[in-house]
Figure (spheres, chains in turn green, purple):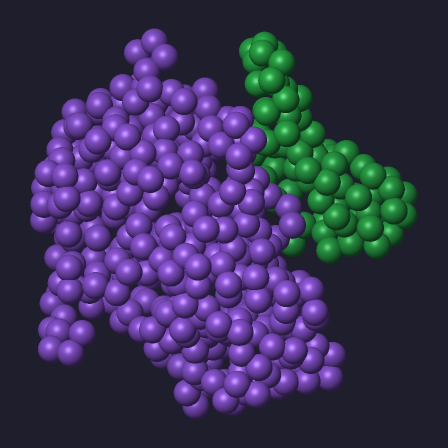
Amino acid sequence: MLWIPCPTCGRRPVEEYAFGGELRGVSERITDATERDVDYVWMYDNAAGVTVERWFHRAGCRRWLTLRRDTVTDVVVA
Amino acid sequence: MSDFVERRITLEWQAPRRSYDVAIIGGGGHGLATAYYLADRHGIKNVVVIEAGYIGSGNSGRNTTIIRANYGIPEAVRFYQRSLDLYGDLEEELNCAFMYETKGLMWLAHTQPAMRAEQARSLLNAACGTETVMITPQQAKELCPQLDLSGGGRYPVLGASYHPGAATARHDRVVWAYAQGAMRRGVHVVQHTKVTGLLRDGARVTGVETSAGPISAGTVLSAVGGRVSTIAAHAGVRLPIRTHPLQAFVTNGYDFPFPGIVGDTELLCYLSQTERGQMLIGAEYDAQPSYSQRSSFSFLQSCAAKAIHLFPFLRDLRILRQWTGICDISSDSSPIMGESGVEGFLVTTGWGTWGFKAIPAGGEQMAELIATGRPPALIAPFSLDRFARDDTMADPGSTGTH
């Protein structure tokens, strides 16, 4: 089970949170403006490993937080 | 299926060569079906299927075995109907029984907006040649006497869409049947071999790097479920995919026949009875992406609560097993089939929670694409470049798990 540390409320189970998506930028290698837009809107890193994500503590302090999670082991890294 | 005699499945494993015409990554239903149709329909037999685990160890062996075509956009209805048609004759074609059984599927609605959505679905399905009709709560009760029309007093059933052509089949036997068919036609299937990279010649993909050494190929197809973003990244391709866990569970045996498949588009849970008599129950995928195949207690709680509202008899059953598959959910909830934008590298992915039913049509159409070099009309709308063209195939309401 995934436990997420909230800066305000402490360690709480994942069911209290809403997932806000991976935090990602568009690669510098994509130079065309339209291609950058397509990448930003549709594409994901979807990394098997550590990702940086946004979460919303829906059933708690109702604040957003950023954390690093390993998507293979489902453990919050930091 | 009247005078059908089941034969033993015999799989003849071969050591891989160093070079093939086509290399397929992923020995699940889609990969093996593509290999089978390449060999059978197009005479392309110099093909290898490379599987990291054992064949069918991914989502082909973890799904809830439902086969249906009641989708919400014309392109999808035609594609899945083709799959349903192929499935109907597949046991004879592959000479292998996999308990294909037409059961009919009911999708319940509890609110007027859901009723309108199901009415729209029925009309669209009829227009595209798939039978889906609206039924009243009383008809639903006649089809499935166990259904509580009051929804436990909380989710009253206003009506349902009914898709009589829906079926179930034993999923691992489908995988083995395709593997046997492909192997008999000269295809090599290699298990327990990980693809660790792609061989490149300039921009072109010319083969795969595996844990058993490099294998060169004229065409490389990724039929991977789960780790597709990692494989595509080797080719420099980014995909509109997030990989989410999808859980399901079965109960112990229910002593009475449970007719058909029942789904709920609002509560997002669905159930059917397995051949052993167990009740097989699934629900929506987990909110956050993950590659961990761990199950959770909170899923059991929420899914069981929904199912018991509709079917009070489930209270007396016990949960036997629970498991998880990791599903590639595309941004528009439709599959992605075809060119990847990199020469020599094709993808069939984004099979999310709707891949098992699509195995025959997906394999047949991808084989035609590889053999002819042109995307067949049935899958042309599902190409990866639809996102750049702003021509997406949004159909989240038809996945049953959105």
